[in-house]
Image (cartoon, rainbow, N blue to C red):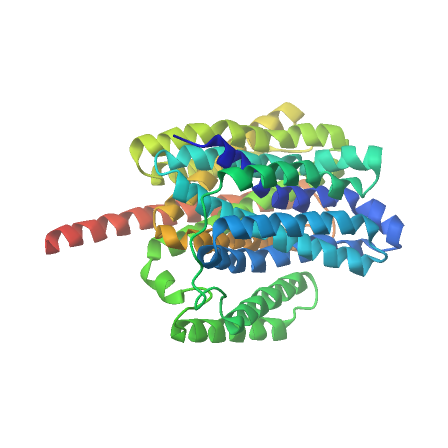
Length: 452
């Protein structure tokens, strides 16, 4: 019997990270006025949030596996509450960034801890449970700019922090009642190795700085530093008894590793469109923000519609691969159809094309999430969930760098078509990797049966 109190507790918690990562976009101009900032300065509110989330997700996932999901979930909600309360009182822009980082770390705890609790408590029809949760996460990300615009219009920028409290309170009360009781923590393995965390953080930060430099003077020193950090990280984690990220397991568990790679690619495509299409529609087609928002709702709306369909398909076939293949096919079709978009294209035609990409995201995200959980042991769900979300943020970072390079000087239909072509290539790579993963798994099964 599914405990909907548990699902709602996790749902209200996990929507906080995507909601706060997207709401801030419409507040940047107001914050520039408040703190006398340039656009480049204010953009640090977005990049530091993504960076903290990318680093924080696997750390908090590892801690939830060792310290307990309920305990970490409550701590995460408390951190988000404290940051949301203090952010409107920030005496300077530096303090606001600090509170945003705390908010990102707290919200990064909620997804891996929540998913571990759901997987522990719900053993049948898990895909449908994950579908329910993915609707909250994807919808909050898509509706974030619209919600943020409404809140700023009527309550100024502090309202985008205060809006978190109804979700925090509801999630907190439900979690106290519905979360499975934590087991006794193992003191020897409660905290990940600090050296691994430092090297992992160094790798992410140096990679971001290198990618951000590609549209100007390329910082090759950052690439060298990133490569050295990754090499040192893999060497260290390979020797650790209790590693922060088990690289030995990733080498042996090819299926899980391929899930992470495909999820990075899926999110490079999704966020390239999520951030690129609105800019294209407003600059080239002259759409107002309201019409742009309506057109972009096709991506979120059809993703929500498709998720329960994908969940029933996965549960019925007991395989996530067909859903992932369907997502890749929808993505290839949608990105190729974007090549037909020109300066005279009607909003309805763009809406219908984007709806195919919304279907793609619904199939792909849920399929890959289910594939991951079926390829890792239950006790490693938190760590795996953390890496899964880190893959999402790596895709987000890569997409922003990609758009920065393509749309560097000005936004035109020709440049938009370049994004579409790259999107078709990325989708084709996801499709090929899915076929490779399926064939490899079938080969391993046949080899195992032969040995028996």
